[in-house]
Amino acid sequence: MTLQEIMALHLVNLAFARDRAGRICVAGTAAPWLTPELRGRAQALAAAGEFVALEGMLARSVWRYSGKLGGVARNAGVDFLLRDTCAELGPAAANGVLQRALGVAVDGRLSAEVRAVLAGAEVEPAPLLRALDAARRAAGSDAGRARAAVRLAQAFAPRATARPLTAVAAG
Image 1 (cartoon, rainbow, N blue to C red):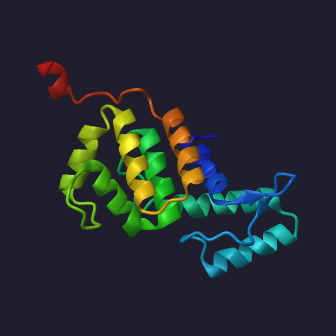
Image 2 (cartoon, rainbow, N blue to C red):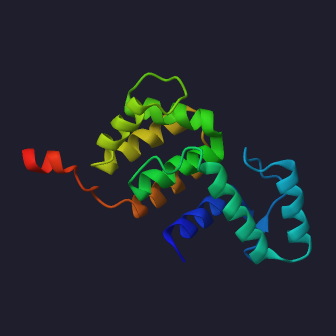
């Protein structure tokens, strides 16, 4: 199983409740990426007892949807937290969360400036993860989900991302 597959399954676990047998409960889950068509397919798979197929379909769907913001970070922990923020709040709100956490003007776009500031902030991911958590909670994220997502992001994040060669040579 790849890191991306593991992260996608964690995104599903954060979004859905499970019954006592560990099966995903689709009913009552609100997520911006869970379209009516996808919800219908998910409910059909659940009704048929196809829970492994259901989990795989949801993992692929949330990974594709969260790719609207995911993939901009080099650090796996930061990427995971950005993807979960996107999956919970939607891409526009997630862009705003990222911009607030980075301390840049909030316009909802992933400009070259935002990407450059993010690349610099990822060198030491712990402060960035804390800033993303605070900005996410301020944007209305569920506190329990946010706590769990940050713990997972910390587990995925190496302590420090390799510094650019120019910074190493200067230091």
